[in-house]
Image (tube, rainbow, N blue to C red; front, side, top):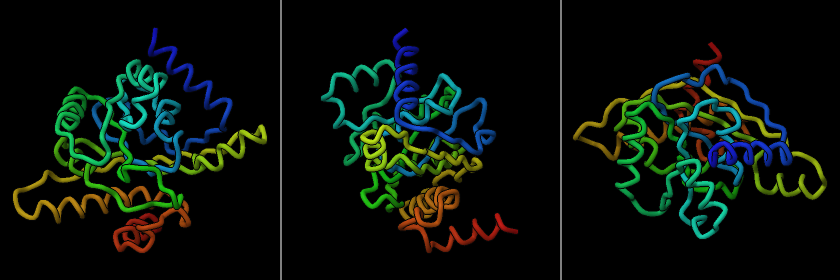
Length: 224
């Protein structure tokens, strides 16, 4: 009952605040474990997954700083979210994520680790790439525009709903990590994840990865 009400509440909030357009929904695996990775523009990014992912086994990461608010603690409990410290490694969180993925669940991660103050892609941290390589599950890239807090607040003040666009790319996988050159491999995995996201974002949103060679390879291949 609590989960159903939470989902209803999320849908109601989005109905009030935004119009959501989703492209590429056919790329979402209907079953089996996978990791979704997306850019992070605003506070609506995290609950947005519940608007278009029609699965009951979705796990989102909730920033520890929101734990002091009763409403967020309640929502996190109902949705079985995972509290995460964005600034310190937490092996308990990693074990929980791996277990849920192995059971066929979905883990939602923003590789940048925080909202982008510049409203374009910033350099990613290594958490998502490590988890994807360790679990051996597909990675589903998602590009989001229109969730910038600034735009949502401005629209609310003017009684206008924000226009949110969700572009879902095609799943890809990362090879298992090997003993040698792990740091270098993780960096290349980070770049792969972020360039896959950048490829489905508008050019002006690609930020740190706009001129990355891997992004150019992806875009060239798509245009062939």
